Image (cartoon, rainbow, N blue to C red; front, side, top):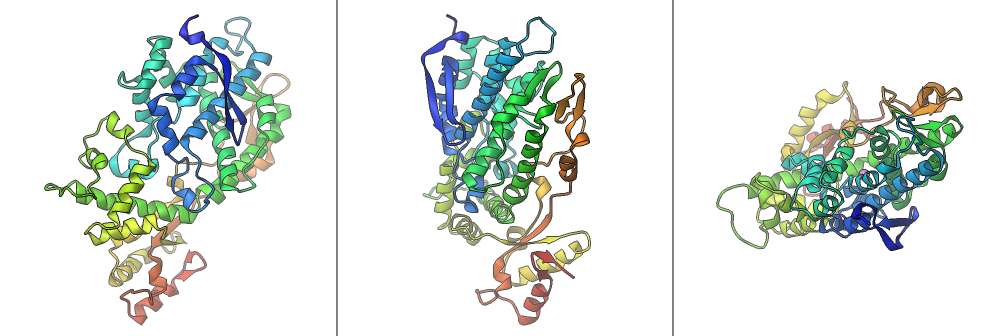
Length: 445
Ligand code: NI
């Protein structure tokens, strides 16, 4: 039996809190899971700083990746049973696509690193490009496993993840408005944060999902299950992903790495225990794939702990704020109040905080999440006559929350300014002026 079709003597199962079991039958899948690059995902949290707000959210990219694989496996199982192609071009499921789909599902996040979003901002890395490199570069264990299937197989798997693979059913199963990736992270993030509103009926959705010639759609009878998924997704963005304190901790992390970058990219580096050897290639803008694969949450957190004692006030203070969870305070602002920001920054500076490191503005639209927006390739329902209709055009519920301006602009600043007894160098008039503009999470005139 060739490697591509080689089955394990006995199916292997991974116990999973969301899907109960993750089933592995193919030797290729088990070999991928056992690679050094995939095992590294055990050491990277799925939600980064969100676990500082929802303490249960300690789940990893490893668990999510197995979960996406398992959902894709179940979708394929249902397609094999109900929608198997009998002749080329009939628009149904072609089972020769099974292995490439399962591998792409398993590996779709393989390029993610520690605190990905912020790390990429500071060091210019790109997890999508790194995902591709890990799969196609001859130096990785993952590439060796995939090459044993066929010489062009790594390239095929990478093209599914970068959405250029010709079979749209395969691409949409991994990445579309209702795909295995989103379904897993919504359920897993809801489960681990402990919130009760992120859930939806996965088994019902799998039941009504079907292939058609240009991709994947849903049977009309499944409309309510799909609506429920959209509402869950909306609530997770509002309550979990856009959480202002999590964003405040991201700001501190961003400033901490920015300050470290300024210090450690300089010539004449002192060699001492606080020197971040594993990060030096990034500070020097000269890193390779192997350097990237050395990093995980533990490596970064260890440096942050060392930096609490570094002889630079900014670096040590920012490291303490991050490690000891001292978030910045934030308020919403809009076009009518944004002209107040320069004056507020001035007051912050007078109080002894460098605004470059201790203030920020951010917009939740910048986060790597989005709401459901009807557009050209969206969730499609198949009507009785076989024609397709876009979900929001027949669902008033989805229409009500689609395309809404659900993000907000926030101004971040040290919370000590609101409590000047805490060693802040501020005179009463400035203190009063600052406080006058802050009311109930809003900036006011
Ligand atoms: Ni993912």
